[in-house]
Amino acid sequence: MEYIESAKGPRGCIFCTTADDTPSSASGDGPSSASAAERLILHRGERSIVLLNRYPYAAGHLMVAPHLHCGEIERVDAASLSELMARIADTARILRKTYDCEGMNIGANLGAAGGAGFAEHLHFHVVPRWNGDTNFMTALGEVRVIPEHLERTYERLLPQFQELSKS
Image: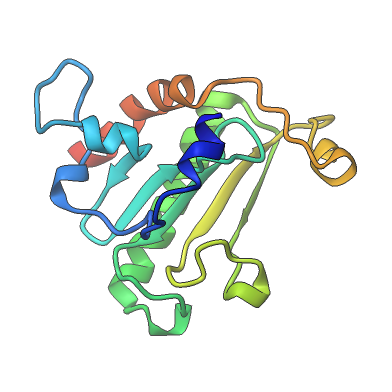
């Protein structure tokens, strides 16, 4: 019901953030993380953001995007692309460590015709995969099987992404 009811409101860009959306530790030593937690933001760097996909294909399905609100990869500056790729690599490392996944899907859908749900803002999906996982359910049954609640996924991943901010 939360999903159905939330779909009724206006839809802004989920990737555009402010400094108030920077995650802080659960212990409260830093800026308020209520907005970051509500938006499932795990990391906000100088030029990029990492957040959980609210409608994941697998537990740990994350998205990485530049701060620049732009849907065309060729319009993103070199420094932003460099940080974007570094965060994708960090995200892959963190997911392997946390979820012991056996593989991963990493990719971007460019434009509405390319399948992008948010075509106006470039973003990459990083999806952990396991041999024998239930991804066939999406194709055959039009249903997703997620063994972990989003809030638990957020709690598991946040400390590791906070380490990125310290380095």
